[in-house]
Structures are given as structure tokens and as C-alpha cells.
Length: 327
Image 1 (tube, helix red, strand yellow):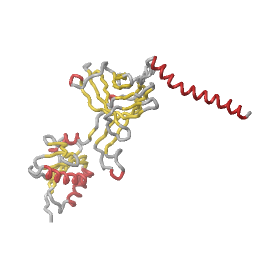
Image 2 (cartoon, one colour):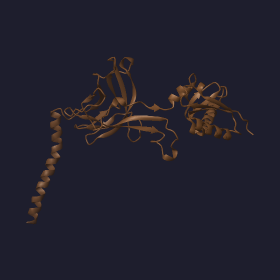
Image 3 (cartoon, rainbow, N blue to C red):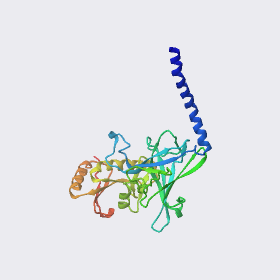
Image 4 (tube, helix red, strand yellow):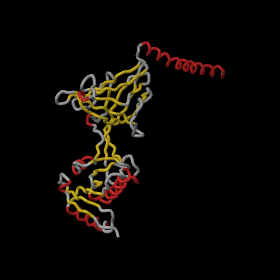
């Protein structure tokens, strides 16, 4: 009796296992016959975000006093509802008409969410779950200037491949650049937060505007060694900092003077210079007093420009030359 019960229980289990083993190949064969065993790719725009270099990517103990570069990006995911893996190229583009109905194209790059580095190889999107990526703006411009265009304005185009070869995923945009939901075709979905991909900016370097403002006619942003030099004249290597960071600015100017001398030994010697911005009456007096005390027995000579908030050029700043000889 016990053997009968055991065999009776074991038979359905074995039968179910056999049926399950046959189901997957049978399903694949049916999908293949119907031509539906390829990838079915969707793109999900999740939410916009930003990273501040020197803060979000740096331990607290090593963070800077001031953030120089901000990068906006879009958190997104690929979902594959098909039957085979999709390989997505790491770049895509979106094209919209400008005010004169010319094609304006933005090219985007996929970023690895862990390393925060650009993906150089195709992204493999399996059928087992979503693949999360970040999206940043690479470049943008008119199609007539060489930036290309999508087949239809008001769309984004992803190129990917599956077992049947190369394919194109087209994402539609509304007038605000928000990705449109199209559940019928499975092309694109968005989160509850409306996300305009056209609002993504490139890396915003907060050092560029002050250089343009105070260093007209000078060399700007030249990288000699450790970091870019704000401004170089025939007599000075200049660092630009807010007035409350004058000590950091002085350290950077002195370091960059030494780098300049080492990497350009045949060039005329430059003195360290310091442009202090956001200067109000009270904090400039305090900072000038602190510098005079600190530089009382300091060499080499240092030139400092105190610049009020309203000034538009270096000529409107107050210049002080600290030329005290070392003792």
C-alpha cells in the first residue's frame, strides 16, 4: 500500500516536471514560427538628478570648500519584454524643430550608475529584469552644422540589435521635450514625474564665467599640471576665488606659479596673482587686514585684486601689490 501511494504521488510530479521541461522549448519554437522571439525594448525615464564634482563623488574628509562643476543627468532604465537579449548602443540622439523650423539635435551618452563613467560598449538588456543607466548630454547643435537628425523631428532614436540584427527604437516627444507614454507599442514609458530630456544641460563649470568676466584678453583655463590655471598674463599667474577663500586662492596661485616655471622654463617669470570676488565693504576690509598681517614677511610678491559684486571687469577692481621682502 505504501509503495502504491508513493508511486501514485511520484507519477504526477514526474509528469509535471516533464511537461515543464518541454514547455520552454515549445514556447520558443512557437514564438520563432510567429517571428516574435526577438527583443521588445522599452525605455523608462525615471527622474532628473545632478552630481557636484568634488562633493558627491568625494569622501567628506577630502571635499573642497567650493563646488566648481555640476553635471545634470537623467536616471533611466531599459526593460526588455521580448524573448531574446537586446544590445543597446551607448549613445542616442533626439531632434526637435527650432524657432525657424530647423532640425536641432541633442546627442546623449549612457553612464554606468556605479562607476559614473561613460559606457563605451553596448549595453546588454536581458529579458530577466531592467538595466538601470544614467543619461548625460554629450553635445547639441543644428543638423546643418553636422550634428545629424532623427528621421522625424520630435523624436529620439536608440539603435540596438537582437538575434535578428540591427533595429531602431523611436521615442516620441511632446512640445516640452517630455517622453510620451505609448503602452500599445511598448516603445517608451515615463514615471509619474514628467521628465523633459531636452532640459538636460552639459557639465556646468562655475569657473568659466568669472574667467570671462575678469580675464578678458588673457589666457584662461590652461591646464599645466594639477588643475587649470584661471588666468595667465605676461606678468602673473592668477587664481580666482571668493574673498572668504583667499588663503586657498593664494596657495593655488603659488603652486601654479611653480608649475608654470617648471613646465615653461624658457618663458618669462610670472608672479602669483589673486582675484577675490563677491567683495562687500565689511568682508573686504577684514580680508585685506588678514592678508597684510599674513604677508608682512612673505616672499615672493603677490598682487591682489578686490572685486565688488557689481564690477564687470578687472579694471574696476581695487589692486594691492604686496611687495614686502622676506626677512
